[in-house]
Image (cartoon, rainbow, N blue to C red; front, side):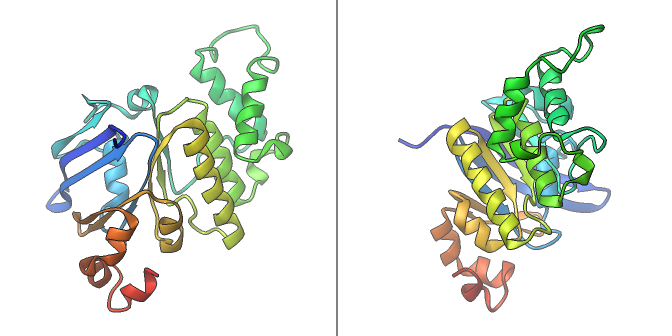
Length: 255
């Protein structure tokens, strides 16, 4: 028996003025799965993640999380329900240490950020260290975050997101601009988060090799519409994907 859907995107459309960025998109994310969202530049991938995470309100259709409509709710409310979002440009406190960034996120999750006259350092230390070990940053816990390389900043952002105990992670181009070694580390961490913490992952990505290495399911967008949806094997064999998304040499690029 297949896992139930934790996230359902139903006939979602999004317009910006006269421009239709998304048109009747349907997507279902199953529990504990890793689902890739691919397509050429301008296909609507980031726009769809913005709709799911509450940064854009859909012009039509709806988003369901655990069977409940969340369309149009503010991002902070959606995040509290268990959907974490990571952007292409990382968002961290550059002047804090790596450890302090994660500890701050944990304090916020436990509603302790407003407790006055109480030292923060002793609290939630074990939880912070555990999350840093998860993303392989425990050896850099006391580095200033602004000094980290791009790949390490992304891993820190993952740890911060995990502090909210999400059931779903939405990742926008998680390996963008990274070296091959850096991409490998990120791929392994996504797998680890998915397998050990049971977090479902929906991610956008241009690196086709990464997509086929990690995804259980793939949805392909083109000009705001879904042109293919299925297992990696189904998508690899789809001639429309090869022709529209990858061009004449698409078959070679998918192998």
